[in-house]
Length: 344
Image (tube, rainbow, N blue to C red; front, side, top):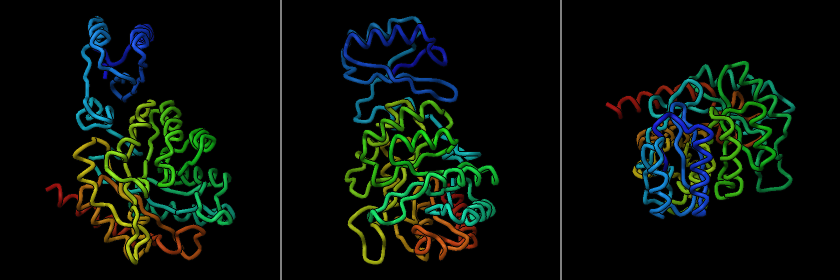
């Protein structure tokens, strides 16, 4: 990791450093922060001649070498002081709550507009809304690009940032062009490294955009989850949030195996904030509040919760697992009280 003496390298300086590392089969990936930029050396950075040549440049402060499989997401990396903002919330300073519908119904947009207004009133900081939906059954509703306009109209009406899941490069471009603030990588795509690279590269062009990376149902060690985030950061975007959402094998009565307890394990290894999705973890509305509060007790920095003004009229998972705005409001109050108690 290269740290310049100034806040960032000039184009001429970057060209010089890039040329040096290229001689040793490496490349430079700028990581643009709000105050300062750092420069990751991608490739084998152990060559002392390369390191000495770069550190000998008058505009370089130092090179930090992290002996870790994830150089950027590691808690000891120079991104450890990086802070991620979603709307008016800085992760780590206030509990972030993302809430809204599993799936936007393009035929009935008023349900989404009413839900967006209601979750804001309940205390949410960001709105979730499914535009495109990965479905196990090919005949189930797969979402509709028309819903993207509805999602952004909900953002304009409430003033809140929005979260939308993307599954391919075209959807990434459409979402960013529309102004989506948070791109969500779902459990089915958390191991899709080609998509992770694309998202890292494209989101790097929008420094204010954030990626919510959900944990794959099939991920094993914690390091596998963090390494998936490393793919995104390594292509230029450090604004990555880790989202446990339940894994396999499922537990009787639950949709998945709740995994909110991995939060402290993640925080031992990475600086990345953790936002837990209790809705998909348990899959039943009556279980969601307890799972959400457990996540906060384990140290989560936020919650991603499905909510709908009329869950029975939802066209995705809402009928089973969405909270009504009244229940959501009470849960948000309890969660923030618990977080305050936990922090002393």
